Length: 520
Image (cartoon, rainbow, N blue to C red; front, side, top):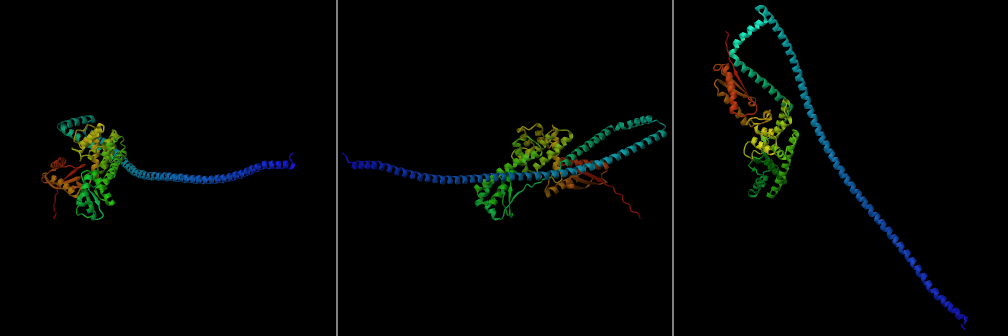
């Protein structure tokens, strides 16, 4: 039999064997929980740090986006503000132009009102004088009837018979006088229409010089322009198609060429090269190409501005380009583009007054000198060149004919051609529109006086008013009044046949007889 203490000992050992793994398991469980809590705390702290970093990054990114959006909005606001300022400036300039036009219209209106008032007063005086004359004539008729003892009808019949017999041989003279009276009436009416059109369109006169010069800072620049063995000059002339004249004249280089557009490109290119300081063949080609693009854009802009100013829509781009080239062309030092605009307005105003199409007249006037933009490149005069150009661009027959016949070289088929010729003469003969050199001016004055002195009986001849009037003094002993009138007409015909001049030349012949006695 097993003793009791062995049983107790066995039970104690068994209990101890069961308790040891349990305690070890509890210890490990406790250590696991402690490690889990530590890991959880670490993960929580790391998550907190990561979230803080992420939030800071998001805040920084959001702040950067906000600053970028604010910068874009500021740029848009600045651009919008600049656009508004530009529009305000344009509106201010337009307001100034409108104010000036209103002042001009007010002055013209006041002048017309004063003229109407003066004409009304004169008309009233004429009516009063007519009434007075009719009363005097009636009293004279009554007195004549009483003295002659004849009735009015009988006296009138006898007077008519007598006058008929006297005037049978003067029918031709009457016809001529009536024709002259009609011609004078038509001339007065045409002058009134022309004066009204010219007064309604009061434009500034633009006269440009055909000489292109470029100022240089010093004479050393001439050597840089010429280059080693003249390579820069040759490259420049080859690129621009003009000639450079570099002489001993201090501070100036002259650009010479028949094409005004090329001459302007050359002048602009040379100024840029002088400002840049780098003058060599490759740089010359770059500058010339850049200037050519700028001039082409300027030419197109000038053509569009002229068409818009004259209210002539639908002009092809090719014609607009040729029209813009006229900005660089001069005729007797008168700018051809401004001359064309003026002719367009004058032709349109005259067309309105005589009942024709004003828009078509303005189109004919604006394009009448278009051939001058290419007359140095093609054969023939500018009327034929311009007509061919307009015909190729599908312009109507009236416009083509106006360009071809505005110098009266062909038979006029359309009235608009005559309107353009009239506007062309008015624009060319305005005071100050065209200038000429002193030598040419003196030569023209001498030609007028020499032609007049060729005629028999002419004692002296004086050209006055810049050659628009000639005063001729005839010898009273060698020429009577009839011969003086004949000499006046022959001198005017000689001017028409031998001279070329804009406008008119008035010839005045003076015949004076003096009788002197001395009382003693």
